[in-house]
Length: 116
Length: 109
Image (tube, rainbow over all chains, first blue to last red; front, side, top):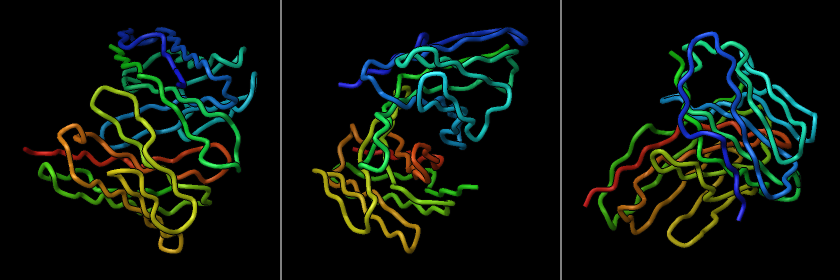
């Protein structure tokens, strides 16, 4: 089974702090994604990576950055946390075999971040 | 931009059938996914459609009409454990998924 793990289930930070959210997958997947999920808005893509050291902006990248130094690990960084970044953050990975079928995304359990 | 619409909430009785509709307008189309998400948990994959027609998987079926930009997820013989949010997502390129806001299904005894 694919396993995607995230470093914390719950996190409370203060405005202006630098926040790191870590995600690790154990299936040698090429692609990794960071989403945030807010009531009534669904999942929105922040950033994704299709290879080590490669990253692409998603739909809402402002205020975030990412790092992918190793294939299995994808980090989301909030340079200076703000209250409007209070949300559920979900990491996902997929094998990267685009064009050959479903290439399903597998999700981690999520990190609920509260910024005070 | 991408526009994916699905109803916010649906309620049904145990043993019944519920159909969750999803309409989409996207810049490209490379498959439609349905995910199930129980409260406080990660979304889990249910189904994938890339060609028109019906895909059946046990009690769950998913239908796609690309010309109409329309899909539905059919849940048969509802059980209490089916109470969850159901997310419709469209892949418009090689990697990215665009998600609808999700439909919360409540199953009553």
